[in-house]
Length: 134
Image 1 (cartoon, one colour):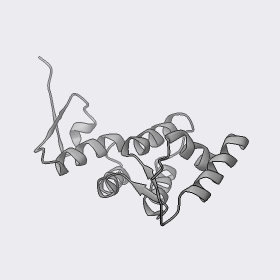
Image 2 (tube, rainbow, N blue to C red):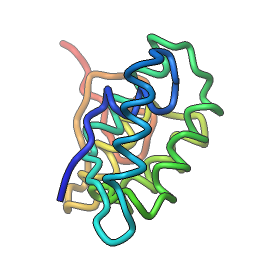
Image 3 (cartoon, rainbow, N blue to C red):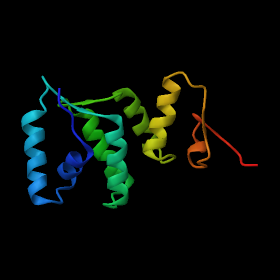
């Protein structure tokens, strides 16, 4: 099995660097097959969302489209695919950052009754409990 790093997916989706974009596309098309899909780690998806939001100014809808594509592509084996799908649905609702949705839902799936946080935005999700300062 082979894996893909965030920067390969960024080049593939943004097509912002002519040489690296062609290389990323060639790599994905020739290396990632249905019989031998390339692994995409959950952290890679979180990084991909962060990079597309902060460095490229992608809208939430554009990012949702990218995540949908990644999760539906049979040539990709996404780590914890069902957790990533659930996190995408939470993110799609507009109430959370993608990484917070991954953490909250992932922890709940692992058996946590809650995840404590100082992050007020994350604390709005049912999987989190806000810690209040003194």
